Amino acid sequence: MEITLFAEKIIWFGPLPITNTLVTTLITTLILSLFAIIISKKISLVPTNKLVLASELVIETIFSTIEDLGDEKRAKKFFPLIATFFIFILAANYIGLLPGFNTIGFHEFHHGEKVFVPLLRSVNSDLNVTLSLALISVGMTHFYSISSLGIGSYLKRYFSLNPVNLFVGLLEIIAEFTKILSLSFRLFGNIFAGEALLVTISSLFAFILPLPFMFLEIIVGFVQAVIFMMLTLVFMVILTDKKLAH
Image (cartoon, rainbow, N blue to C red; front, side):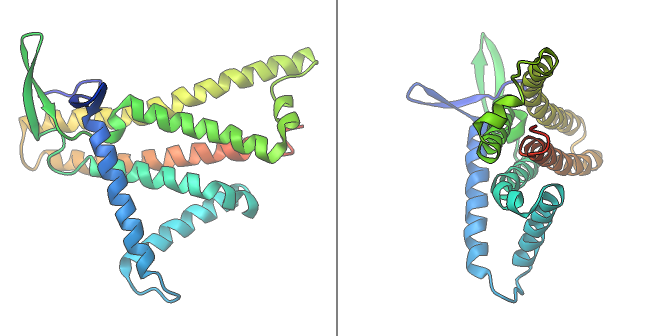
């Protein structure tokens, strides 16, 4: 059994292929949605439920982090997206470590060779997913920048009649594309490598030895969620700063 670079197709929905990472994405979204509904019904002025307390701790920590880097106004604006990135990526990474991922599936023949196709695969081991997250991150960053600074001040960051400033602006444009590559490939590379490592170790040693690597992936999953969240937040704070726009 091996991990392929691309997500495997399980079924076809008309002309559209349904991949194992898409199935996991839907499962992750469903779990988070159900969790949010359950928690929202248990919220009170003096919370006693441990899940509610843990949820409030996560929310307050994320909000205070955003507020520390920016201000209260921008914190309220950025919070929904930033919190969603962190919670979704973290949940997707941890769900991908559950038993059954990459081990339950079926065999099919590709070019005369028997190939194992897992039914479930970690969401962020698919470059399509991480690239989509990166595009949303950078796209919303520029949306917030335009809405905060205005279209005139926004364009001044990249275009100027001054040759030096124009050259710097062109470098800024190139940097925006490198942000997309950096965000997507960093998350994809770490999760894909960890998944491949776990599959390889588990195929050689079924018990005990894979446990240290599993704990390592738990740490990596958390760190990658934090990195994606913090980089997105820093980009948003920089591009919405009125002092840096002039």
